[in-house]
Length: 221
Image (cartoon, rainbow, N blue to C red; front, side, top):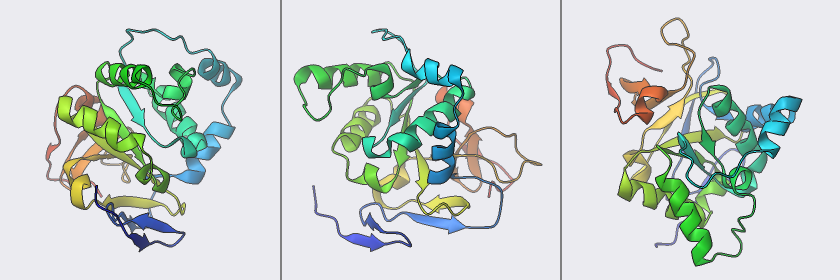
């Protein structure tokens, strides 16, 4: 693996292997922000607290989404987990479903359990943040699914909390579409969408089934 440099951002640095460029427009929320997701986590209902705390550990359970992330983003990830489960997606997050896992003590058993969960998930979403770029597990998980089903997408998290409508992928990230909410609710349903370019997109629900973004006349951004 080549050594990466640093690309300055408004609030810190991104590894240049990712070169994340976020596009700023004054619109309704499209990309998720760190503050928004933290707020979802902090404001969860009692039922949601119990739901998270009492997730059954079922060995052969099938998930819609394997949420690939850095544990350093735990609060944002819990908020994102709530966002996705509120839309009736079955989501795998290791420290929620398999709390006995110790990712700091990697064993063959740990890797095999994670591999099994990856294969029993219909898709992988990478919660893309600065912390995710330095995670040791993220590239391994992404590679496992990319080599198996190629059903991988990005879900960017804006750290500086400015509302943004899109972001530019570079290098290997261009291989994957990304997931966001629409800006224009007069033209698009208020659901998650999988976007490959301004004119190539599809509803996230359909993407999970294996369909790919296709050309549309209406610009998504």
